[in-house]
Image (cartoon, rainbow, N blue to C red; front, side):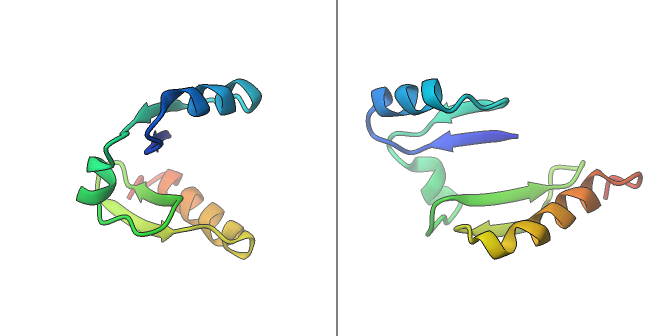
Length: 83
């Protein structure tokens, strides 16, 4: 898992991470170039990739009621076939 922050300033990101440590890398995209190239319209946007690096699922924004769906998609991608 990798997160990409599009915050213009680095300090708020560092402060948030100090209060909310995460077990994955957080990259920076202060100019929003990656977000633009990926056609992101809502934050957060999640891309779930298969083992070949193909985007299998995309979620624009997050709602609590999507949690079980996303979990099922992750489990599917982590399955023995590694789709």
